[in-house]
Image (tube, rainbow, N blue to C red):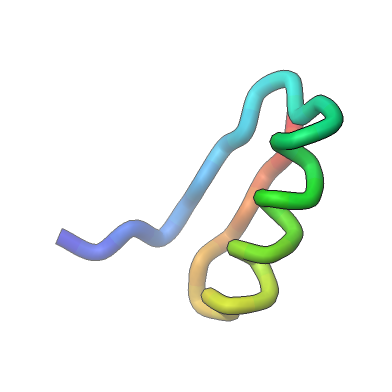
Amino acid sequence: MKIKNICCIGAGYVGGPTMAVIAQKCPKVKVTVV
């Protein structure tokens, strides 16, 4: 199973940068921060 979409709810001090790194390393994955 391949992950195509990641939704991060309430990206705070830790979650925001983490999602940014994931978005950089996985260009095929759509990262949504809510």
